[in-house]
Image (cartoon, protein in one colour):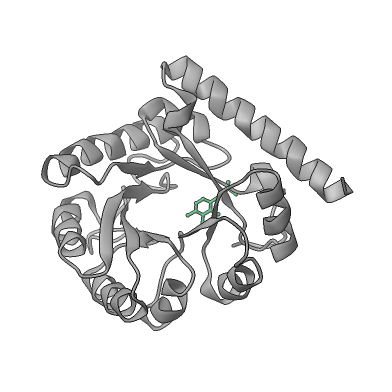
Length: 239
Ligand SMILES: *Cc1c(COP(=O)(O)O)cnc(C)c1O
């Protein structure tokens, strides 16, 4: 193995151990939690190596970086998740490679995603991104819709041609009442998911937890954790 492959294999093993331990502590089966590796800022060669090491889900947050990377890795058996704030003028490109968009947070975006998914003849999975730190405008600083906006947006996704409502996503807030209280934030997301599933029973995905707080997310009941730094290393720049 190359040095980089050794490094990624060792990091993956550590993350796997953490997920398994968190599942055991919570009395959950390991199979209930899916690892998504966030490859943003890292090259296509790393994505290829991760695929060789058994990774099947990867995530990106900027279309400019993600589009060429996904094209270079089109031969790999990967599911691509888009997790960044998404402008409508990037939607056509993102729909070209993403299997799921986890950052659906406004009606205009739903309309654009639906139009492009239909045009491409594909079904796109969608998660409503929840901002637990939403301000008075009902939106989070890093995207997301306030909890009281979930229902309307979910109904819109569920009724949109080409889109499939898969569940909810959040990023633990840095400000507001949940700052520094990741587990409380993720428990709140679980409550919102339980409520959503009453009207949309197939929207079972709960995407929460990153390198620093995956244990809290698994404890709360997350079905998907999004891990970047702990697998690939500290990013050279903010991304
Ligand atoms: C970067 C990113 C992650 C991964 O964060 P790490 O701290 O590197 O594990 C997860 N989710 C989203 C939305 C991200 O942008």
